[in-house]
Figure 1 (cartoon, rainbow, N blue to C red):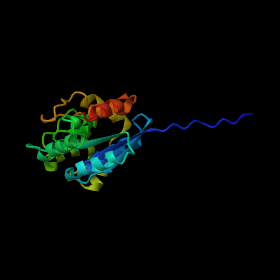
Figure 2 (cartoon, one colour; figure 1 turned 180 degrees about the vertical axis):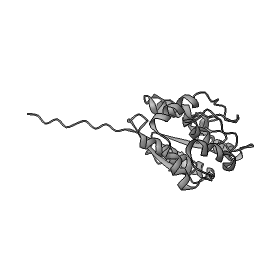
Figure 3 (cartoon, rainbow, N blue to C red; figure 1 turned 180 degrees about the horizontal axis):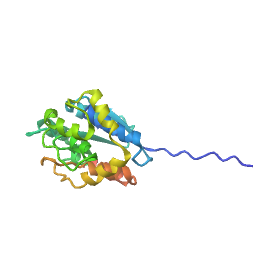
Figure 4 (cartoon, one colour; figure 1 turned 90 degrees about the vertical axis):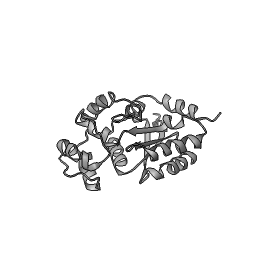
Length: 210
């Protein structure tokens, strides 16, 4: 009797550069919940601040390990200088005017805009943690939120596969203009990681320099 070994197929290797702890822990929680298509092997990098994002992005892109490298960050408050600087440096790196629009996933004014959608339609209007603390406590029970590691961990424990479905519906209703408060294109990442792999080839084609 012939012993047939299973065929092992390589998964699509994707890297996501996360601005900081909130972004990293949130995406890591979603990885743990296995809400994405299993064909994707996703590596997360904590940039430890938006000023480090361009260098992390360039490094991961150039090392050739990943099929696509994405960025997950917030826009902060106006005039959003650091956010605009991230986009400018990514555009210059690829020498493509709109390269950043292909790879940057954002939450305006902050990533909590996306996370809070697991429980409510209410929008975050400020990046200030003190301003958002009452809303966060209302839905997660975490008091006086300041972005500490233990607080982020407790919030992530409230993120489930069930309310991930609710978040998808709510985020899909947000505008995708990154200059408008209360906007996010996170629905794009959801769609990508849920479906087939054609988006990877499309992004890379658009990132090719002329």
